[in-house]
Amino acid sequence: MVLESLITAPTAEKKPWDLFFIGFLYASVAMFLSVWVFREEASLVMILLTVIACLPLVHKTFKLEEEKDTKITKERTLLKEHGKAITFFMFMFMGFVFAFAIWYVFLPDNIVATVFATQIKTIKSINMQIAGVGVSGNSAVDSAVSGAGGIFMQILSNNIKVLLFCIFFAFFYGAGAIFILAWNASVISAAVGNFIRENISAYAAASGLTNVAGYFHVFSLGLLKYSIHGIPEILAYFIGGLAGGIISVAVIRHDFNTDSFKRILTDAFDLILVAVFVLLVAAWIEVYITPALF
Image 1 (cartoon, rainbow, N blue to C red):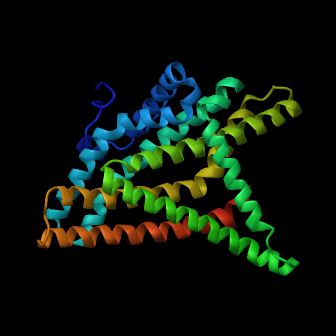
Image 2: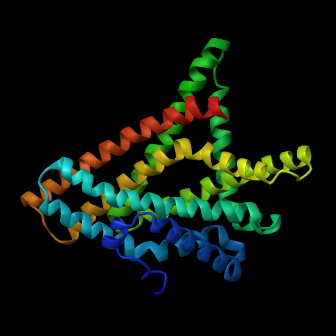
Image 3: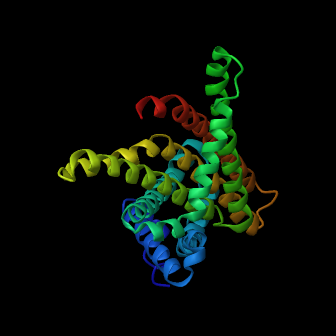
């Protein structure tokens, strides 16, 4: 009850930055409790505990956004209003990522291997799939063309699947989409943390642990590498989850065959289209921009 009562949906829309610290707190408390009580299953239990803390806020937000659909008729104004909720969700997600990444970097190796066991397996599986697509071409030209195009389609396909999961989870379980998003936060954090650990080790060997600024540079670089395309992806997932949640609340209220329900469906469909477009941009950035920078 303490964590669940820290902030309300209207307050979150007015002070979205506060959600970064609340997200950090939710993730940190969930991780330490999972290590303390369910160490062997901590990689999934910490996600579950994080989601439990978020449920009241997410559910109330869906209700608030659905009420806006019934009162606001202009779609542009409505999308602008939804943007307030999406903004504070993004800050909360970044709080998750920052918390998990911090603990991944600073916890002992044996605890990290246990706490992020499932996330590490997922990252390895994704890398193997992308590597398999990248070497599928038969000639040098075919490899270059089909490699980038194949990776783009592979990433886009996976991201569309996650978007559909967010929509369906939000529709069937109300705030269920937050589970998918918290899970993605932990996977991104594991990737960021692994990048930071590897580069800090290399930097320490080269500089002899003398330049503290170098370590902050490595940490910032790790966050930046995955944020460039990761933030648009997560933004799309939140938009899709919001669309599913709005429809879910409307169905619960039995607004069928009314103009307001039709307006809600139209608004949700527009949100899904926006989410798909954002995923296209995110996949393009991940394939063509991120590798060029890092």
